[in-house]
Length: 93
Image 1 (tube, one colour):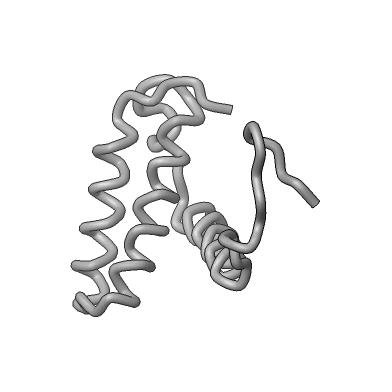
Image 2 (image 1 turned 120 degrees about the horizontal axis):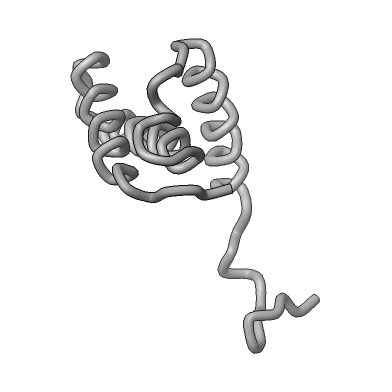
């Protein structure tokens, strides 16, 4: 649930840039991983008001959510969204 989106962009930017800095790799594949890492950090930010979602974070919690997000990203790569047909925002079978 989203409580407060204030700071989500900053959290994303910090996670994204921090990931690239830590890995010292600016290849396209690593930039994609950095986007997922930034999104992971932003997801913690919006769960609570202000900075509360980030204040008590542990490295383990961040890594767990990053792994889940990465698995979801990998799954989405395998789905061909262009093969689905929509009408009035409903998926047609």
